[in-house]
Length: 469
Image (cartoon, rainbow, N blue to C red):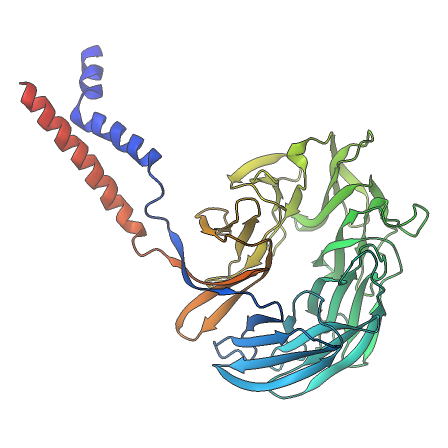
């Protein structure tokens, strides 16, 4: 038996296999399943922005060219297949992040939504480039008085949802100011009645909002993630000296009185999780102050009742940690940390490592279906390394892209070109990039390479052994 084992361990095939594995471990990935080929890189022009969207669903993306105003006037030029449709002008300064696109009246054409700031008023506009209609013209939404160098009051959520079952979607959006405190609300605009609904006044700083239809009655709910930034007095309504478990119903009223969770400075991520066909809320609160307040991860029901809880003390490992979900059925939630670790969190609040990627400046991901396979890819930005990682929806098959000389991913979209492969468009503060993201045609050749490598080593070892005889 001993001689047989020795024979196997010293055989040319076994030694070749070990050497082949050793070489493959030190070689860089030679046959990745997916690739991103750079098509062009364009220096950003601070006076305008370009975005892309297929507005008429013909399989070709329109280019939306937005010029930033010099004196209280913004303009948008829309191109289709390289030809100008028209130019639209708007009152005020455009500094409210990106545009939003959606079909509110189900006619197969997407409208363009944008916010401008004019004389301390936030104005909403909505128009359709193909039929020429302007559905919303300079609609006053709220007042905004910038403080301490603030330049904008950014939308934190934009979505078209039919809240009243009249087959016309309402435009639902959130606005969240910083030092200025106001506005910090969720809004819905009804196209039929030309009316605006607002959530109650509060000091809650909205970082992100998730929308779901809950349980058997399919009630529309809006779930808030937030940051305790400490700009309000502690006696203010739902002060940002704390974090609060907050859920709005379809009327933008509190589903239950917000529940205090954490203290300033804290970051609260809240996402829905479906367990046995019932929706729960998972809340991760990271407190990183100098008081003796714990961090926590908690499971609540939709009425704010605490089901399970785990408390832990803050360490640098938890800096900026957030919950992430891209599962439309809300069956999985992931914990993403600044170190680049991605862990799945189960219903018992236990974690299981899924993937380790490069360190992330802010643990969040842009979700976009790059290759139009009806599954979102995830785009992570590694600030300190000036790189982008693209992951498939199973967190594997990474593609890493170098994006030197930039400071933050501002916008990402897919450019459709008829029967040609879609292009990935990434806009940063200094440069914009156009990529062809696709399956690597050489991917399956890796197995031939492995066999070839094994054969080379076996041949060399057999030659060496025969020369000793």
